[in-house]
Length: 177
Image 1: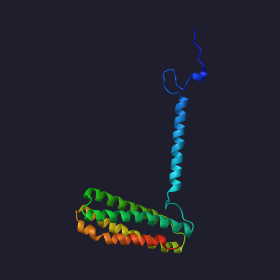
Image 2 (image 1 turned 45 degrees about the vertical axis):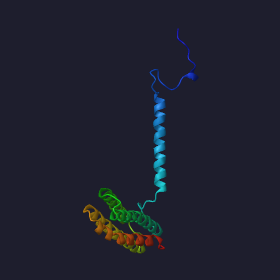
Image 3 (image 1 turned 180 degrees about the vertical axis):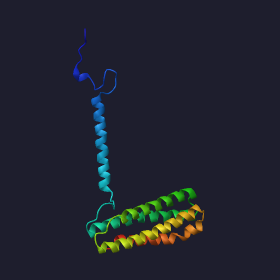
Image 4 (image 1 turned 90 degrees about the horizontal axis):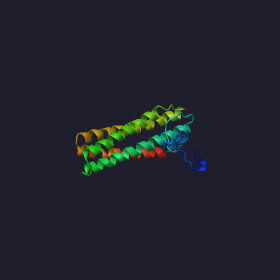
């Protein structure tokens, strides 16, 4: 004789103790929704200089965002250069930090350069920022070479130009459109 089971006392597992397909599918859907929401949130909270700029104001905003990204990397290289000069960091660590910063600055410069300026005023803004970023990349590249060669004095000589690059980029971000 078969035993009757109250349906309210049965969980969503099969007779073998595994979750049912309905439970598994529901879990996958929840994970997908959470991942999509996190991606959307991350995309909306981080300013990106990518995309079209139909007005000078939008283009200026993208230029400022690009300069702010570069400032962080230039300041980081100046800081690690001081620490290396003073014997407070190891060469491999310093080399990695400087290489990452160089790659980052080059990346934001390339991204910004891919945006078409909407007018002549934006052309001038692009030339100014490109010059500042070019100087910063050159000094960071020189810092990378100095670290790889194990030359703390050459790296120490780059601290002042790196600080100047950061100050120039900060002035650019504070300039009125």
